[in-house]
Image (tube, rainbow, N blue to C red; front, side, top):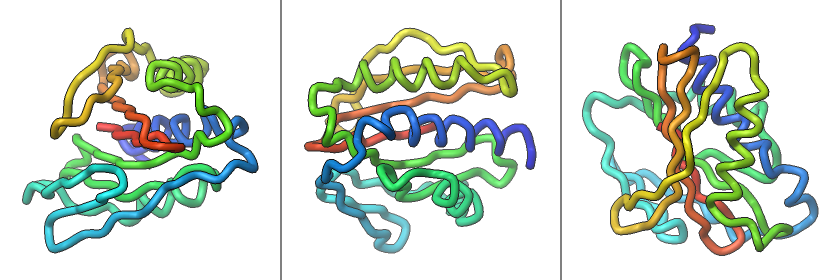
Length: 167
């Protein structure tokens, strides 16, 4: 498995696992979306995304994430450029057992999990905020292997779940 693919997998797994134990036993309100041609729509999550031509669905990476994830999270899709220089993953995580968790708390937990890694090495920036398609997200940039690669992680609370983009 290449370094870029491994880095993307590690970030997505950390996101899936960071609050995993906190959500055990509690029910979430997550609903899956669907592709309609090149447009992905999930009304529950408030997400509508048209896939640019240079991005392809990566079912192999999606299967890897699903196999190594938890029952508290699921991934909607993985998109990537042909050279795998850009990978985008949309996922949701059940936080029903910890309703007080904010987006900033969530990303702080992701930061803690990522920075424990020794291969690859992560350095995470401060949690900020951004707006994507009219929706507010907490935002954190992770530098991988001292600038070899970057991963942007966006999180937004949606009911009893967290909507998470890894870009």
